[in-house]
Image 1 (cartoon, one colour):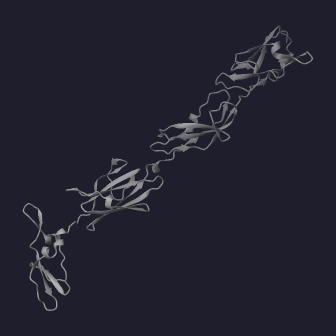
Image 2 (spheres, rainbow, N blue to C red; image 1 turned 180 degrees about the vertical axis):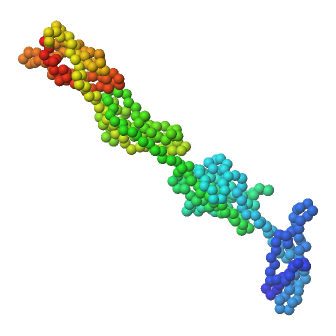
Image 3 (cartoon, rainbow, N blue to C red; image 1 turned 90 degrees about the vertical axis):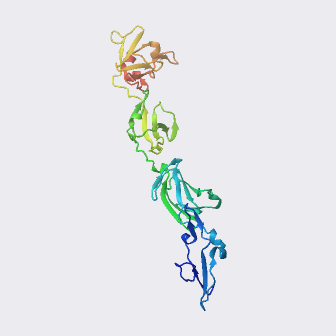
Length: 358
């Protein structure tokens, strides 16, 4: 009361304008270790202006609320082991944590609120966010944090209990995909693919030795994706690598290549089946170099040689005269790899054919 000083009725107390009491001042411990409020704890007042004193009064009778005071000197703590992506993982203050989701349970006998900041966003758990404890179990609140790909975040957690105790804890959270490495992919010069050959550019592509994902080759013509081409033209490829535990999904830039006809070799064919220089009864034989097979421009299969009659080489014009078919030609296929030439005109490669007399 105003104008009075107060003193506990004990030898260790002195008059003061107020009393500061600890749990030890208010409670006694029994032989079994249990605590009980000291109902006999008394005090008296002394009037400041004349020194008159009141009789000793029991504190619990004058101030019943004193018995309801909860003494809690313990700050909130992390309960159990945090989980990262569903698996238990110890996290120390200041750690760098990699995961998509982190869950941390905060516990205290008198938990009031938990404030956690992820990057620049602040969140508060209080009221219904806190699960009240029963018996010896404390109050708990679960802090759940989702990592954001491309945005590593500093996480700060501060928990408060109703007695004003604080617990602060922090770490850095990084999404697992942020740690993925972009693989280095090199594509060697693809050169020229010859028409008719079977080609595979896998051996032209180099990826990291420890890459264990799927590699796909895509084919393009003038920027449009196409099926694996086989006809002459200018094309390009892109290499696609799938994502792995270490490497990011990657698509390369275009790499050009050409499919072209094999050039007709010099002295590509020879003539046989003529006698006396340039005479034959019915047929002549055209034979390619031993490294090739041959198909006539009117034929359907490659052979070691082709046999031609007059009707193969000559046509009848509008006047009823026989004239050499200057468009008659042939194709060659290289035996070693199946590469094919474009159509070659027989009379250009073998001028003597026009002089044969049937």
